[in-house]
Image (cartoon, rainbow, N blue to C red; front, side, top):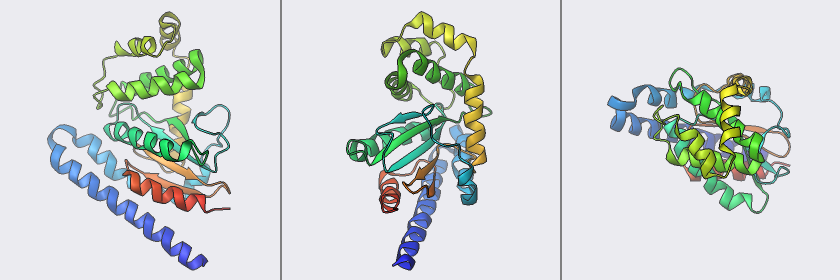
Length: 240
């Protein structure tokens, strides 16, 4: 039985990697001229070291969690708000939560991973998310994050003037938001999240780790299609 389970996990992991390469190849073919650097990241992120997953910082009350904090499976996503693949994967994760979140099976943990060299605007946007959390708690954090991903053109194209507009849109005090954002008080937190991503083997975005109830971890690299994510969730749910 264990041998069959191991073979199944190996088969799905292989399928995920192959699928990601095929997706990245298609994107490279269609968008090479305009998005070469971002597409290169999508391919390079397949190199995450599975053995380094245990270096992940423990999930705590400080994390931004969507869903039941006691869910059987947690998906820790390290994301860049200006990454086009993260924008797409954000919608995939909302679909995951629609299916698995309401029943308390899966929780979504969001951590910051701005790729500064590719997207110089992303670190400040990550700080904006943290300010939204400070001023409005977990719910406003997710409302702000959803709205930012909804309107950003990606690839470092979001006008910084939109950040306070998003704050107003989700019902935050804009004056307090601007004070928080201009202070830079969350820059170190964003940097710490990015270091955590690197420590676990992440070298591109989105980089995610699926954590089963027994602590076993599975890498989830890139903007995987919903069915691939679903397969990995189902495996993690079988862990005791």
